[in-house]
Image (cartoon, rainbow, N blue to C red; front, side):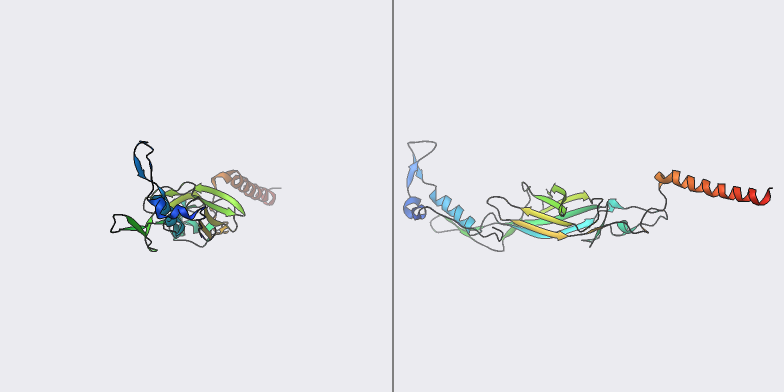
Amino acid sequence: MRNNARALVSGSLDLFSNAYFSTLVPSSFDRTALVPSGNRAFCAAVTNWVFQGAGVLRLGLARHRILPSSETVDGLGNSDAASRNAGEESPATYVVGQEVEFTVEIFKKESATTPSTDDKSIDVLDENRYVPVVDRLEGLQLEYTMLSPFIRLPLEPRGDGTFFLRFKVPDVYGVFKYEIAYNRVGLSRLQLQLQVPVRPYKHDEYERFLTCAGPYYASAASSIVAFLALGWAFLYHK
């Protein structure tokens, strides 16, 4: 469910009865030996899950920044807007083509157990007992979308509860947003949306001279030289 509510439907109340808990059944390894049934362990696990004592994930702080590797320098030797924003925490906008990094913290609930007097453990729910997720979450992806996803890549764990992704901003400007929609059976749903628009370069942020534009520079220079030569010939020669 969208609000992470959980429900359990049981076909019989006998499943949770003391009689079934204490019933002895043949062992799967030795048919001549009798062992307690698995009803107690199953009921403890399923009720713990229903009351959100297990399988609960929670998103922490989400951050994004422009990587210093995306610095560009204009013809005057001064860093443009892209490099001035490098390293800035959660900038309001990106510039096309920048290298960025997105990070998000993910935690899972861990049930505390207290031993009882009859050597059995009782699950104790602690709403504030969350631990970082250090392992990879299968299928956890980040999307950078504008109507449709332009980027959809898996988030990688750092081992401290933080998941990250580095990518290059698409060469398309508009209103983009980060999206995480993680749905897995047995786990709570993770949902995140964070809007970060992308803008084109301003008129004063382009490089002053482009190497690839050499032929155009040469044609402009030759036109100027030809005009001056023609003017000089027209004025001083008959």
